[in-house]
Length: 310
Image 1 (tube, rainbow, N blue to C red):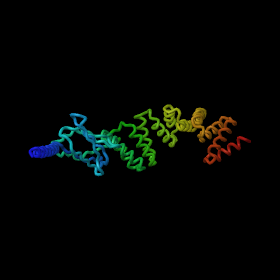
Image 2 (cartoon, rainbow, N blue to C red):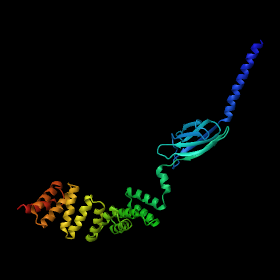
Image 3 (cartoon, rainbow, N blue to C red):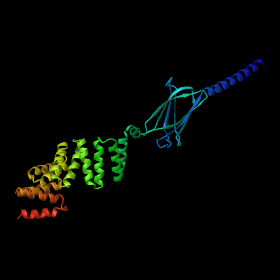
Image 4 (tube, rainbow, N blue to C red):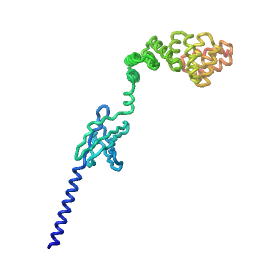
């Protein structure tokens, strides 16, 4: 009888100890929760939440956010933790959080940023205006692009790219005088810009300012000697300046760089005619017609060939 009482007593004590141990564990553990959103306050689902004790890396927990961007981790031993939030496409964030005994630690709302958003914050006001103007340009809203580039220039007039892109926007609006002025400013600020020299040369050539245009095209050729368009445009200016021999050299360079550049063969044929080089003229004009039989100058080329072959 005594043995039975002893066994019952031991069992009761054991159950009591188990109860006390479990209850004690519940009292010393804490809970951590929070909500993860993007920069527009949209919930970020399936973000990974890693919780690591600052005392020992072995004490580690991991969970994920739900469709509402919320996460909860229970059973965390009290202490300080390093909490890292990661999600593909966003920059990670890390916090130090103190989890209290039997506490409910709420990290509130955690906002994640993309790399582009972080970079934008470090930009100057002028750069932000420039980037916004680029967005309008890409959407073909050139009036707003012009306004944006002008805003950027007003904040920082020494950046050649602001002036260059302003010129491109004006060009799209067919405001060629304004475009020329913008490209001119870009070249002054960055004389070694191939694009700015080329664009300025093009607009000056349209105004039949061939001498000035040739100067900018020469610079473009110097900066990019393997660009066939730069050689062609310089050659065309030289033709208009009566400098056929030098122009011929540039047209020859064009077809060396790009053998199917039809217009260059027409120009070469015309120069060869002026030099009384009949065979070379015929070969060049025939090549032109072969490459561009429907070109607006193809009819003239055929007439010239007919004349040369008489």
